[in-house]
Length: 372
Ligand SMILES: [Zn+2]
Ligand SMILES: [Zn+2]
Image (cartoon, rainbow, N blue to C red; front, side, top):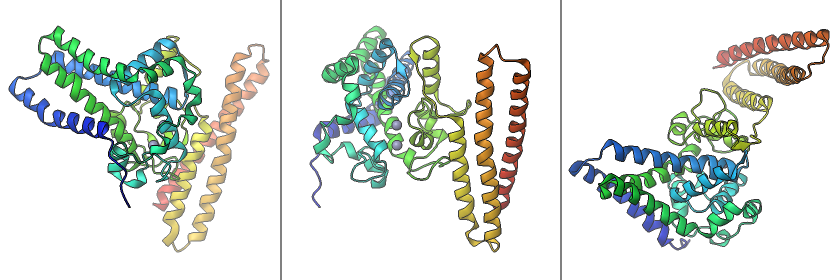
């Protein structure tokens, strides 16, 4: 089959910037050296680009996981242009299609099923889906956003002004113009590109699947570290409108922390998060599925399966009851007029359910360990 034509702009951009980062940046470092000032500018701009993509392009505009004040939207729209990953409109259209048709080699723009190279960068080097390049039918809601529309209309000017202007200005202030252009300009752009691209490639290949195996997305703490928290991709593909990707407090997700901090300052509101019982239930289902698969060779397979199913059903029910009771308890705190007797009754009910739930979870873990 004939391969689609090469997109020259993208190919030249990725090749030249990549080669410069690989050859010229270390060469200049060895011959002239970089100082702390230059490394700080590199890091600051890298973080600005990265967070604009994750908190802006991805969670705000592609998934509508929260609402943002125009100041924050401008901040992300400029940072996204600096990241050189196309306009919000284009990026979000591709990304919504990716979620809708994940792993479908024809419809998913960067389907992991077509291999590492294709999902990482190959999909942008040739005109694989030319017919839908200007089809924005899945981002109509974003077209009516004046900031998104402005950024789309003036994308080229914005991206040139930020990518050349900011490193140039910093270089003039610093004194070493070439060094700053290489570090805060080229290396920063290449690093931003590839860390984002890793989410489409590596995060669909390397890691665990604690929530679902119906698609190739994985959770990977190492990737999360380099991608401002986006490495928890298995969770994200199942609960895509949640403003968090790493749901545990200790999971490294600076994008989630930034959104929450913005909400405290009044710059973000209506943060969406999935009910905990649904998350627990998804995790439980995956554990049951894995345990059943392990039982295939077991002699008393049917007995084990019955025991597993029994414990699973019990725990599923407890998840529903426990979280419903917790919700009732939280609501009653707002109703100060509630009688003392009713309040105590709710508290006792909650504690009983919680203790039962914890005990069942322990039993379930023991059973899973027994099977392993
Ligand atoms: Zn994905
Ligand atoms: Zn997404």
